[in-house]
Image: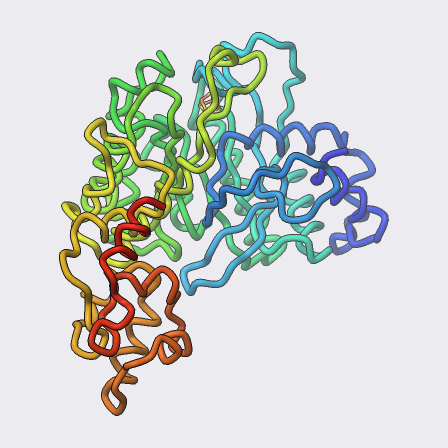
Length: 412
Ligand code: SF4
């Protein structure tokens, strides 16, 4: 039994499924539909944080790879749990990595919700305290506008009939018309278009039915314009599948720069490629999870730490790939040529030292207004990761900074 199915059963047992006067929700819904449409979002990770931890067991807590409930951060930084589902797993596209694709070689049941059904399930899970929001994606029928219309209808029932004010992440399907994007932008908190690859050339290796510019980038542009005119509470995001078509990490990063600078995206999500049985890419080797993790770190250095593009590019090797080391450490080893004195370094200089983040850099700048920093313990109390930071710092005239430490660090 999947985690999602358990949740639904539990919800049912607990009688939390009373929606106003309308009775129970689940008695007439096939649980395998809920399960299949939850599982169908597997390739659509969109996790807000990443981890190299791999969980191979059932019945454990904290597995970030399961479908059903996922987490995201709202505009004010609060983490919310969301019911993540497809509206339908019927799709006319042929993305080679996806189990909903026309190229899928297995047999599968096709399911679709009605807007009524999906709204009721969402509210039921909400009232059961399992979720605070909805992440709604979908396979795409031959008429993407029609699928989107039904998805929007679900949102309207949630907002208007059930007065649901919770968080909604709404997936914009490839090629959908401006009018529907506009409607979705008026109801949802966040919109996203999955660009999947860094360019049209790469996309054409994975799908013959989607056009990168007209189906994806143009839709992103529509969202950008709508957001600038009327706002969108949690902005626009996207997702890339990492390593399904031989692209390098630098190819990805270059596209990501455009996404942030030209499309004004709030976040980019990375989903490392893992072959799914019976898809066209089932024989292809999966990519290591750390690749996704390192891309998230690079993204963080650029977006949050405000490292320049050129600084970040130091972390990539000559073939454009990251290695499985902390990219901030790689950048520091290749760009810092002398130890940093925490007593007089600027906030920006401190931020470039491994083990020092925005909060600890800020604390150091404040603390040293009245104190001299001469011991590692002082830095420890300010939240610095001293083990990582010490080789790069000049403390007490350089007592702790030794070139052999630096070399030791370089070889880690
Ligand atoms: S558009 Fe592609 S990735 Fe999305 S559901 Fe269809 S086949 Fe899967």
